[in-house]
Image 1: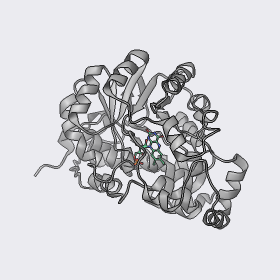
Image 2 (image 1 turned 135 degrees about the vertical axis):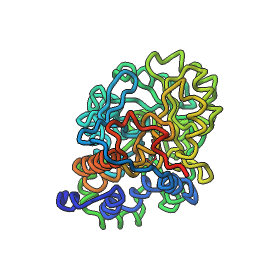
Image 3 (image 1 turned 180 degrees about the vertical axis):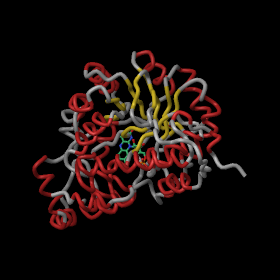
Length: 382
Ligand SMILES: Cc1cc2nc3c(=O)[nH]c(=O)nc-3n(C[C@H](O)[C@H](O)[C@H](O)COP(=O)(O)O)c2cc1C
């Protein structure tokens, strides 16, 4: 049962995170909440946003505020979408479909992960025109080709290839929790299931989550290494990106760009956009927060391609900060996931509503009627 009164009292994404932490067993909560090694990069993503100051401007009529953003020929109602998240149904049953449907209803993009717990076909149907597909390049080229042709058949037009996984990130919490694929019920996990009956009952109803797009291929997998080899490859190079560009007729995006020279190479290859992302701090602890990586990248490629940013978005004002520093659009990863963990579909709605309210209020305080008008002039100068 979802306590709607409690959800209504959640004022921020942090409040939803705290609620999710109480409802989701620790091993599943950590799977989403955790980052690489010391988690420094994950923390810095959020802190660095807070450090970007914007100067309010008043006495402008802001009774009507327009938050729309145009991307790849489509107008979205908000300047953010849902980032691709693998295995999210382990965090909360049916989470993938909850988010895909919410994105359709609110007219924002939903990015279906290669590693989602729901097939790309079902997610395309649920997102109904608002779905984009995220591709992990496999060490087996026939696996990659099969995903691409399925994505084409399912009607996706936007393909994001994720570049920042030459190896899986080392996430200390997952190691301590002995998280494994295929999933194993250790005595510790069983105790956590007993302590979180709402989650356990809902999970029983929906069945054990798996990595749905690869379900057949992974049937024989007996170790995490097997799974990793099927999903990703350390051998993905710029030449492969060039081949992908030739292969995919729709819009092609590279996710996980942190260096201006890499951004320039993506532009040279003819990509339509890059996603400045560090995978939410899940790959390395030593990297830069994305909001700090953004300005030199924007200076290098802003005139040539669209720039999307993710990693660390927790407030509506973060969307404005990203735009002021050169991004056109953003993705929220954990921010929306925490909502689902806090209260299923209603929790996802609450997370969306919080970000939207914060965005509109912040635009009003900045004396800006349209998100499209946000630029460097909004940054505080000293
Ligand atoms: C649990 C989890 C699973 C993820 N799975 C994927 C994935 O399958 N593919 C991908 O490109 N990015 C994946 N990401 C990264 C997100 O797409 C996004 O870059 C990140 O969540 C943004 O940071 P934020 O959570 O601070 O907003 C995942 C992130 C999390 C938290």
